[in-house]
Image 1 (tube, one colour):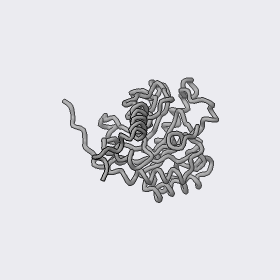
Image 2 (cartoon, one colour):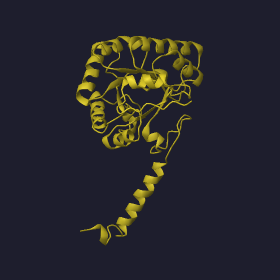
Image 3 (cartoon, one colour):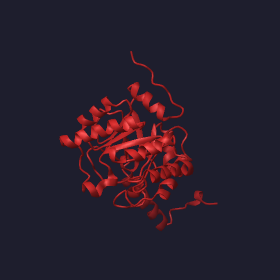
Image 4 (tube, helix red, strand yellow):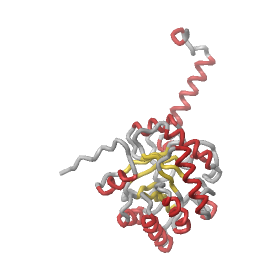
Length: 272
């Protein structure tokens, strides 16, 4: 007999753990501004990630490294003003938590106080355990992130699938268990083999949300601009495009330009 899914008026970190225990998949998308966040939230998406991918999508940088804490706070503040239901998780940007747990705590506090975000996300495992612990002591929820960690792109030198080899896979599993032990409420696994991701999800009591990690995890996340087809150069295997907004928007802009040039716009009913 099927069991009716619980309806959440407001998604919290506790809600996500309940979803996992009830075998309900968790939906997660990115947003960086008020207008997009309002649409994503209204569609019933469980988690909105204010990702440092804003560095790529919104600012046009090649990597996520250049975006600053102030810029992340700006984006997160815009998102928070739109949201009524979704849990809003904000990425701590590169350089704000690695190697110095006091800086990590200060950065996380600024995000929570100045943006109103609900939680922060950090990339890495044992090497940032001190920063995670310190942030958690302040009562700030932390989401972990393992596998492909874009902030470490220059270390790895590639965006290819991580943890294919036994040694790296073993470390990833150890790091995942450590993040749960430290007190993280959830974990993102990016671009890792589906079999490994499922093993991690089965061994952890906290939710595991995948991107390019197969269907055996507890939820999925995509970059909204990618799944809407607003970007068109990025074509990884895991990306499903639900629209082709790049072409549709291009057509609309071209038609507008044509209408203005031909004096078809505005017509008599479009003026005062």
